[in-house]
Image (cartoon, rainbow, N blue to C red; front, side, top):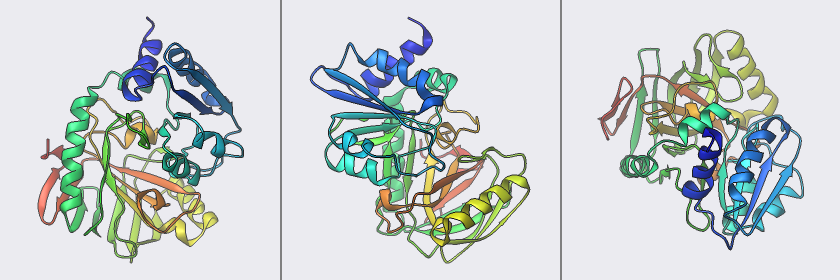
Length: 318
């Protein structure tokens, strides 16, 4: 079996648990069609029906898919979204999972990423992720610092963290593939400090120079750096004030993930932290806009209520 076909089979058989009585809907767009086709080939011997819907590339991560895609997503057993832009944090995804659909999203995935990360030990990743999720949920305050200049404090008291384990096997479950992260929304309007993104930014890619973001009262009030910082600043301005909301604190738990400039994989790298701006509705927040952009912090230190969980990118929770 070719490596791509083997990876596709692991995704639909092991990570999604596709069975012979289920219907799978693959949602894709033209650049991602070859990988969607590979996943469809792997799924057809396993499922009752495999359907494919293709639509034009959306402009931004978090933008809604066009009609009739949302209705179709809510009408099947399993959805696999192999798209250029993420639909993870969309009303369409939320409605589908509320209807009981299992949803896996693979925004921007590449052939190399699919082959490499589908060979990860997902049961071990799941155990690690769930352990960290419990620690995040129990904490009142998170502080992230780094040698690059990050120093931000995020109140998280009473907020449930989410485990994205890569095993999407139960009715209504959802997450990325590949996966491996524990994440949550900080308390809106209360994060304070400075974030220096030195890995990558969703939709922009690997950074030639760091992007420095000043946060006051849970909002990005200044974005500084080079050309890529200017692009991010323009995105925030175009979408509006809610795009500046500090939406997510996440920690990667996948030991097979590497920095590629594709946020799907980058945010899963073991020992990294990612902080996102914009939509937090999928995590129980009030900001439901068509914008969600993650920034990757390399070699961070993460403290939960003063206890060090990561030190310079080395996990102390595993």
